[in-house]
Each structure stands twice: as C-alpha cells, then as structure tokens.
Image (cartoon, rainbow, N blue to C red; front, side, top):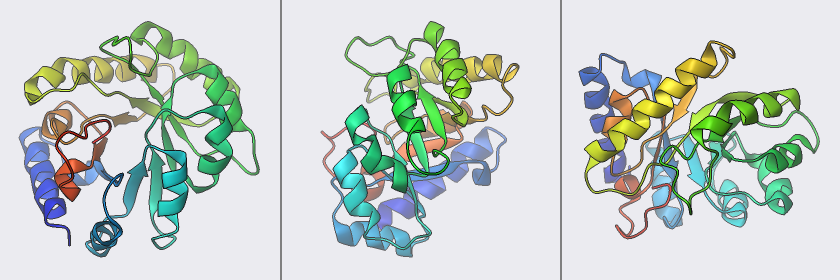
Length: 225
C-alpha cells in the first residue's frame, strides 16, 4: 500500500470522530494526476477504489490501468469538446460550472453520469465555478436537462493554514442545506484537499479529493490535490 494512503485514512477517521461522524460517511478520492503507475496500482491493492484526474486524456489513459471496479472521478475544468472522452468512463463529474457543459454532458449513449455543481465560494476571479448566488439557477437548469445532480463542490483559496478554509466549507455546507429543502437529492459535499481535508471533514464533507498527501508528489502542485 502507498504509505500516504493509510496515513490519510487514519487522519480522516480521527477528524470524523472529533465531529461525531463515522469515517464510512466519507468517500476518499485519490487524485492520481502526476502519480506514477506503480503508486496508483499500489493504492488500488491497498483497497482504494475511487480515483480522479483533472485532464480528459489522462483520465482515459489511467482508466485503462486498473480493473473495472474502480470509480473514476473527473475534477478539472472540462471543455465541451472533451466530454465525449470523459463521459464514458466517469463515475462522477465534480466540476459542472456552466449550462453549456450541462448540455454537452447530457448528450451521448445511455444515462449521463451524475454531477456536482462547482461553486466558487470565495469568488476568485481566475477560478472556475458559479457564484453562490448563481448556484440554484444552474442546479435547476441541469435538473431540467435530465442530469442527476448529487450535490456541490468547492475549492477554497490555496492555503498552508487549514483553518482559513473553514468559512468557505461552512458556506458551501449551508448552501447545500438551503438547496436541499427544494432538492433533497443534493446530499454530496465535495470539499477538502491535502492541506485542509480534516477541516472539511469537520464541516460536513462527504467527498475528499486528496492527491499529494497520498502519492507524495510535489508540494508545489496544488490544483485539486
């Protein structure tokens, strides 16, 4: 097993206990971008079944490395012309951020995989995602198109102090709670990465996107890690 994987699992369990939650309530997604093949295979052998990529070509390539019981997540900004590559192998799209993408995602054989709406809670100009105020509108439009919207995702400003992420996680959790009164199926909160996933657990995250802490890649590589 990848050493970081067991450590991350232990930290998740401890954070969940502090919050009065069970670790089984939380899905750990191993963001495998830039991890080498041996590390990915080792994580799989260690019981990891949820993996993610943030580039379409990488998702397709990596999906062929592991057995069919792996659940592949897409966590990056997705261009419409790449949907046909990503859609067939994706278990969950974390980054629905515009109506145009929702329309592309609906197209194709079979039912489209479920999605999360990405919310730019901090309103960072260069970051993808709808604003808090736009979230309800995009959820409604996606549902009208026939997409299965399971919840919300956010990525707060990069930080070395996990506590600075807490207000953003709380705001996303409050937003999901507000919207779930209208749409009870919005149960997922995808939030928390290497530098702040324990705080995310304490604030109600149901999905964590962790890469660097598992695969020990460059600390300069942040993104969805």
